Image (cartoon, rainbow, N blue to C red; front, side):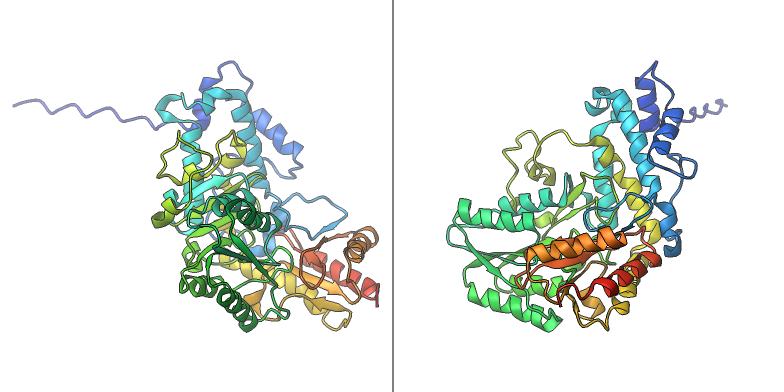
Length: 452
């Protein structure tokens, strides 16, 4: 009788990227103490989280959200529309990744570590995390340096244009995307058509405005649609607009910078083939992170960026300009996505809309305050712009912003570009409290008659 075969030795667990970086930097200082010091430097008030700290889906109640952020005291920061403050666990991950990458340097970035560990592998993990967040394939996502970066590449490299074709945008679109649409006119001889979003921007009025401009532009080929306006906070019915354009043979590029990770939806719900957004906004990843989505079947309709011949031309990543990126920022994206799921998209949307309603409801009786979005939850989320009666110049809007900050310690931001005049934008963040909303309401009650 033959002896029983000897069972194979158990395979040791594959080393983590962090372990590989440690072994690659023999003789360097211990990272634990450095990571703790980095966490202290960013103002952490609790012991630093370790890389293994789990973030379970739907484990963070919205009432606890402010506890997860280290906020500058003495102010009411209602300008979260610029970019999102990182929650503490993401900031700590970013600090750890910065130390890791700084120590390993090109050993990490050149992908020479055992098992293929390094930048290429981690970049794929970041794309996969974003894809999991928005509900698409990882091969349909490219990480970019900002939402503007993604959207400008989609617009400038759209291959379906010929001279004389129409490209359409509106006054509530973002400045950098408007510039890219105008560039199509000066560099590709497109006919650039701009229209103004109607006021009041009810659903019926919005759809009528897009229908009208499409009818007035028979050679239209490309339409830019902003899901949530950075100026007024208006939420547009994107899916209906995309379908309206597609029925006329018009492609749509969607700016979802203020929608992804704030509103509860998946990317396919938009119906669009091309979408760009900032991961450093509502996903709360580090600054310098954005994302580009191209539906798999449409990859070939966006040209590669600046002859990126070293990347497979069939890959979405060939549509992103080459260059060294902020590796630690990208490495922190999976943690930011985990934090997003730990709160939950539905809970986030409901909570942030409630914070917005708290201040709006307190100033409804002020006839000098005009709220710039309809009183319809489908048409607003968190950002909400307002005008004061008589605030009809940029200088007056700047004066309002200054008064709110210097007299009441409430930070807002004035926004130009709206066809009917400037507005003040209010954007609570995930760190905001009901007291922040009440502070704004008190300030508006004190200052609403500045120009009346």
